[in-house]
Length: 424
Ligand SMILES: Nc1nc2c(c(=O)[nH]1)N[C@H]1C(S)=C(S)[C@@H](COP(=O)(O)O)O[C@H]1N2
Ligand SMILES: [Mo]
Image (cartoon, rainbow, N blue to C red):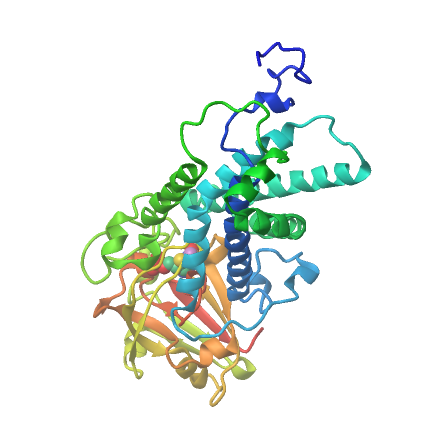
C-alpha cells in the first residue's frame, strides 16, 4: 500500500494514524514481556523506596522528616532496626541499582505503546477518557520518578532539599496509576507471554499494537528484547559497584561513587560532603576549641574535650556508610565511645532514650539528626573518634562522628558538637 492510498483511514504521515508506526516489533507479546518485568521491578522499587523513607526515622523528629505534610501516607512507618548492620546498604543499593537498570526496559516499554499515546479521537467514551487520563499519570509519573531519582543520584546538589518531597509524593501518584494499570493489563499480559507459536500468531491478527503496514523486520522481537536486556546489563555493571564495593567499584563508571576509592590511607574511602563544603571552620575543631556537649536527664550536662573522650572506654566496630544515593562503603573499623555510655554519663543508666545530635555545621538539612532509642541502645552505635586505626580525617567528621548499624548515612552525623538525650 502506498502512503497516499485512499484505503488508509487517515494520512499515515501523522502520528495519530496507526499506519504512521511501522516497526514490526510492536505487538502485545513484546509489550507484555517488558510490562511484566516492570511489574516486578517497579513493585520492588516502590517497597524499597518506602522502606528508605522509614529508615530516616521521620516520625521521630521533624528534623529527620523531609515531607512533614505527608499525613496518612506515613501510615506504614516503623522503628528502623539496627540488624542486620548492612540493612540499609542492601535496601538502598537495591533501590538505586534496580532503578537505573530498569531504565532501558521502561523506555522500551514506552516505545512499544507509543502509537496508543497518539491515537485519535482523544476519547471514544467516558471510560476510554478515564483510561487515557490514567495513562498520562502513569507515563508522566514513571518518567518523573526515574528522572528525579537519577538526577539525585548523579547530580546530588541540583536538589537543594526538594528531592525528597518530589520523589516521595511522585511515588504515590505514580504507584497508584501503576497498580490500576497492572490490575487491568497483567492478566492479558500473562496470557500473551504464555501463548505459543500458532496461538500467538493468531492473536497478532487481532492485536491493536501491531502495525497495520509493518516494515520488513531487521531484528526479531526476541532479538530486540536481548538488546534491551544488554542495555540494562550494561547499566547494571557500570552502576552496581558503587554499592557492592571491592574490585567492582572500579567498573562502576557511571556512578558518582564508583571508580576507585578517593585518596589513599585509612580514611581513603568515599566521602559525601567535605568539611570545606559543609563550611566547617578548622578553628572550631582543634583540641583547644572543640568540646562535646552532652545533655540528659533533668538538663544534666557534661562538656568533654577529645582528650577526655579518649579516656572513656573505647570500642571498635566494623560498619559501612550507606547513602540514600545508593553508594556505600565496605565495612570500616570505627573506634569510639558507645552512645549508650554517653547517655549513662548524663543520668540514663539502663535503657537509654532517643538522642538529638547536632554538628558544627550551620546550614544544610543534614547538619543534625534524631536517633531512636533502639539505635542509641545498640552497643555497636558509636561516637567515633578514629577510623581504621587513625584519627578521623576532617572530611569524615573530625573530631567526632556518629556511626549507627543499619542506619542510612544521613543519620551518621559528622563534626558532632552536641548530643541531647531524651529531649524528643
Ligand atoms: N554534619 C553532617 N553530617 C553528615 C552529612 C552532612 O551533610 N553534614 N551528610 C551525611 C550523609 S548524607 C552521609 S551519606 C554520610 C557520609 O559520610 P562520609 O562522608 O564519611 O562517607 O555523612 C552524613 N553525615
Ligand atoms: Mo547520604
